[in-house]
Length: 239
Image (cartoon, rainbow, N blue to C red; front, side, top):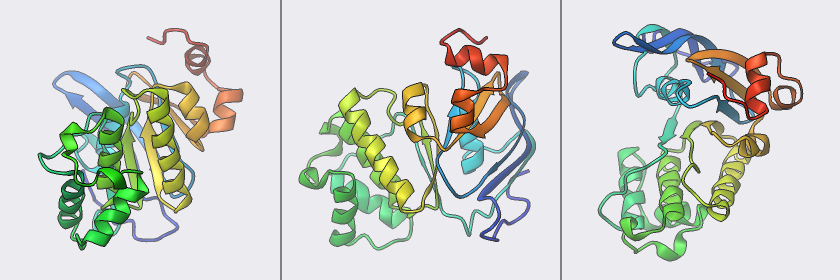
């Protein structure tokens, strides 16, 4: 059940999952996840491929409904945004992509606001360039600016640097740090342990759709509590 109970109190989590699961036919992708996503330091989802990280992000955002359990969130009161791993660029300029996102969010799409968002992600110089002619890293930053056009309180990022080179990855990570410093709660998935160490305040570790560990990042990396996490951190296959 989606959005059953409002979470309007600022002291409460932005999103709460209660026994949430998701199945496609007979295949269980996410199983009985109970979790609070509260304001604060970045939350990073780790786990082997196919562990349910993207599905968890989509359920928390409200893009899909769980097939079991529930999600408690006040979608009207808590502004949220989602950045896909491979975003689609609109057939228009970078500036027009931002203007479209602002209008869709019900915010003024004036030139000053558009320019401010582009500058925020380092794309002010390419405002009039067709979005589809930007490099991969530039497109990802433009997609991030479109997400920020919603002025989100919670920002979901699905492996935002998976296809980027190290330099482009650093630029995106710097923007994430800036967004966090401005008070936005970031929840992101990554396959990059180095990136998780650089960004995470909290780690959520998933295996086969189940939440295996939920701990402060320093605790998870120094002293994981499960054998699966120890093997994962050692670079072993976790099946």
